[in-house]
Length: 519
Image (cartoon, rainbow, N blue to C red; front, side, top):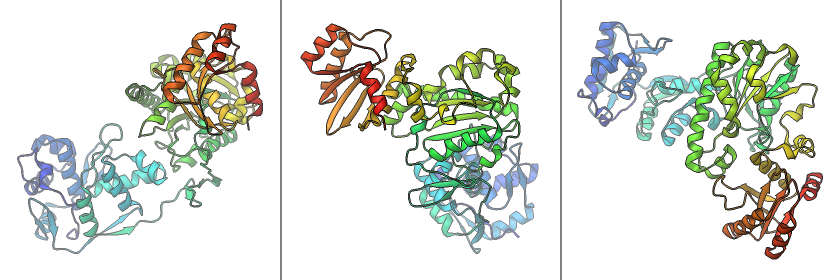
């Protein structure tokens, strides 16, 4: 019955850490499993004194050969063959120390249409994760996980270890041999209520009948922050999520959803932006918060290496762009008794926005009926009665900040100015690195003129130092014009120095004029 199964091609060098040749390890592992009537990667590691990747590869070989089934919840594998059937299998296979070849006809394997392309892609980049498949192939979590299971079964990648990490076990040459010796047939098309569909060559997508347009992807994420939205009906919540998803590609936005009060979030289980399947219980909600805190710490390390103060600056200078992550919980009421005990949530809210991580809590209750504890001081509270776009749209945010930019932090003010200048026809806008910026915060171009702009959000008038820094930064960055842009005015001394050094001074009136003329 299993004589037509094939195993992935492997090189002898893979087992260099083991004293057992690859043919003997495969056979001896199988006989050991039959004897113990139990199969797991850990068991192979301990008994044969091999490392995790070696044991994982052997288990994958045995799966591909039809000896073992898929992994169960406890990490073990179901045994599908008897020892006699395995011996019959070996009689139909020629095993050598360099390769495994077969006398039998090609194995027929049902796989996702993306199976071959996904395998080659993961081998090429050198690591395997479900999230990477989601983003690269614009597919949902469930489908990406299914493809990863198929690749694991075929021995292309290892079983999962750690947090979503897998090792690529085949070279491109080995995978090509595997494909040549396996007859792949496409499984039934993957479908769900949220399937994303390619609409045209511009890579627009649709989900749940919502057409996505990524032409301005990432723009409305510049004003994201931690939020609580009260009086949030189910329709409002779904509209909010739809707006985020339809305007932001998976490369720019990843989301995690907790559906604790059956708000209908399961319809998003196949959108490519989703990092994990929709969460439906409180414990997993806090597990996700713990993971986000860990991710924030990892990003802190990356930012330090790049000398970047936030995710937007990091993405400008790094070859591997990080997506912004939005965690949305449909009902905060169910979590309020745990807030005081959740150090992870407090730590996350204190610093997460700079790392590109944002927490959004919805609630159908009035604010007075919620016990928020300390987090009330760390999060912005909105009411659904406010215009929907107010929560994160840069267009409406411009109007909101006409009389409120004085309250901004330095970094927030810089990005506000960047957005305003872009809407006034400036192009190629870039923020400089945080520390060591040489006196310039923004680089911009208009009508062939290169501007070096220092942004100052002060509570008093700006003095000489800002002018001196902008003048020095102009030379450092090779700009034609140096500018100091502020929410205040300039001292008399600063005006005189700017005139001598030909530094443009854009004060409060100029800023308001730019806001008014923003298109």
